[in-house]
Image (cartoon, rainbow, N blue to C red; front, side):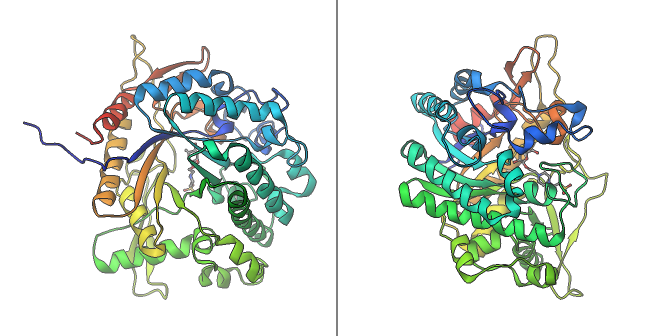
Length: 452
Ligand code: GBH
């Protein structure tokens, strides 16, 4: 008789995730203002085949059907993002009630289906008006305006939300969007190192101001969703593990470290020298406002080893082109990250509650003659990563839930619709959604609360 395999604790939160610009479409409807992504997608040559999120999955109109897909899988929680320019088309000022109504309808639908709503406030779609007005996050005013939007959302919807994530992944919209990247990203400008560091500072300050704004009007739990460098030791020996912990703290020295410690990592400030951000002690207090949970977006591993020849004591071991990977240039497979992420974050910062807010993979899925998708590779990826998550839980780390990226195939930024990350296949001609084998696999995991 089969023995039960990897049982999760009762109440472990099984979810799926999406983001506004990647799924909603309807970019010019009901008074939504443009975001930096709408503008960026019009620039020739930056997005695969000149595509954009203008239609995406048409989630804006088909959200009822999409909630039904979640319900059919038995999903307990939905992590979606609100589109800031739908609420404040001008970034600030007058509220667009019609845009807000969409999220009210979505919450009604989720709650009626018994699915917890978890909302991200900024998944990269900054209102274009703020980019035009003051260069987006280059200006400290952006942090203030973000906090105002955050407070408004918490006041209006907070009593019906289970949790709020302020900002999704700092590095992407800052480091890639403000320069120094071969992967095109909105707003697609070239700034200087100095300007980038100051923009990073304004973004984490915006996070902290938003936490305070949310707390002042609502009892809703609040945290963030960050793609920490997914450091994992090359071998599980004390010296490599210790080196990996140090590496993580240093590599996120400008984002998660100051948010959880109230100070930049000294190595970051030292390396930036004259280009380091300008900040006050008061800023650092705001940035490190206590959060209720930390969300980790975990995709590809960064292997670390102990190195006695370096002052920092660690070095990254790069993966070459033969290392196994999924259908993205950067998506190498290292399933122990769902263990090491929660463990290292717990050890470094004693976080009360951790969620894996994204984990998933792209695969060039093709429906067969019966319109079925046998995505065995995604099932393998998912299963292996859940083994890692289970290990973290069973060792007592405060990992409380897992959100798969993504509910359905969607607009994969610079890669357009050419990369499919969904548990559901989307036919972009008909907008039909087809559950893949992986959706059935995930539904079984949720139903059993175990892997086997
Ligand atoms: C997530 O980010 C996003 O939140 C989500 O919107 C997106 O759809 C999903 O991933 C899938 O891509 O420096 O060349 O090694 C993960 C984004 C992309 C962040 C790769 C780190 C490193 C690329 N990650 N990036 S590279």
